Image 1: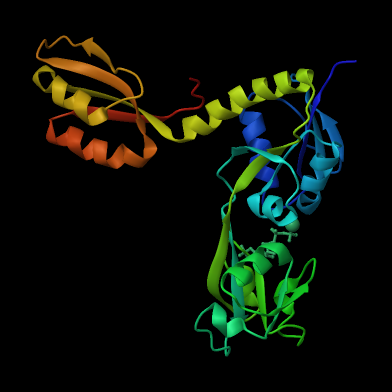
Image 2: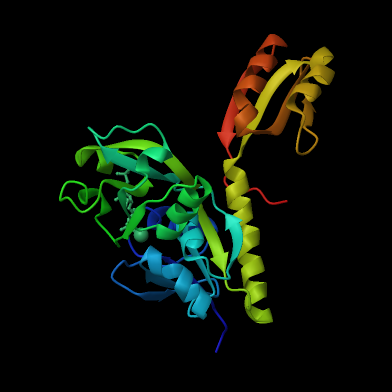
Length: 286
Ligand code: PRP
Ligand code: ZN
């Protein structure tokens, strides 16, 4: 029997689509039939377990799954001896305190003596302890946002992404106490065989994640400005420079960081760059 690395991903919810997309972008084929609980990849020794996100850290800790993709919030809340293998960067959200519209909030001190409903008692407790605030934490596993309106809590502490859930429940976000993104977590005692599969998978995932951070650009520029161009684009690798029919011009191809892209573009324009083409990069390996 071939050894397969078992990855736990969220069955349905905020994380599921991007989690599976990243793996697909790695060239790994699978059906992702959401009715299934378990599925094998067709062309890579990987097996998927589709689970509730809250359960993923525990399954990885118990060794039922080898690795998993969850929000950092679940990882920190459950505080199990797991390893964060990669920050995947997507599914950004925050854990925030929210109060009914008429609640007068001037800072965490306003929560002293209040009842706060949350699914993240550990993260909240830590934050309140740091601020030396005593409040009553009311732990609840779901539908936290309705607790103030039914008189169970004075405030809540819940995940916020777009803010739509809070707004539709007449709540106001007053303080973000924690920020989260999707992370890949892993079991610390993986067999040598599984470690090797994980390394192969990470090589691909890193190439996919890295590609998102860069753009590929091509342009023509007067040859006399080549030194200045090189200084502007810096570079991961030395740019490719090709002569043009008009010997006073050259064509340049290189990779630039997405974050610096607009700056670079403006500076290239001032040096007379023309015919600037920009494309997304699908994969980028070291
Ligand atoms: C969180 C949170 C809210 C919602 C907020 O749930 O509990 O219900 O997302 O998102 P919004 O600000 O975009 O409206 P989550 O996705 O973690 O689902 P779960 O509680 O079922 O795991
Ligand atoms: Zn959840």
